Image 1: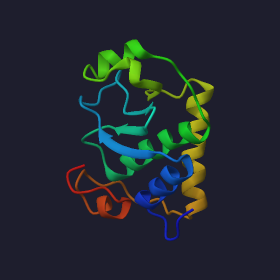
Image 2: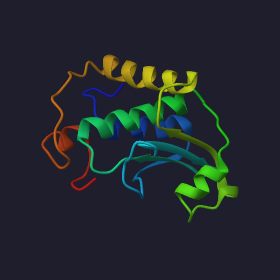
Image 3: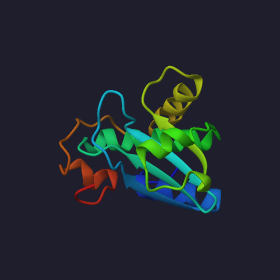
Image 4: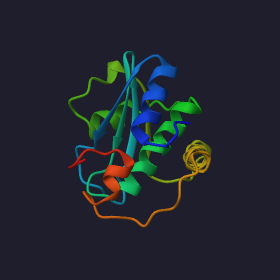
Length: 147
């Protein structure tokens, strides 16, 4: 666990330990009740973690940590049709693994959420008050302005 804890340092460690690039992206669609707020897409070359737009820095951090939980647990789901519908510019043949965060009704979703909570506990991270997007917590969580 990086000390002091920062999300960018943790992402760098995960990238190194997996031996592949790890990229963060905003989801290309607005958040909603029936759309994922986070997604992990693994291709042959890299991991891509997508997070919702227009949410607080704390929420973004939790989404990203949840997706890292899927990586750590080596979860697998084949949903090429869902990926094609959500990200039409992405070639489904290139995607090795897709996991989308919408609800916590499956064992994999609960495991990924537990990993996210354990990461924060291990980091000794306090529970900050949520902030608006672009607010003061964005710097603490390592999100560039506007993300």
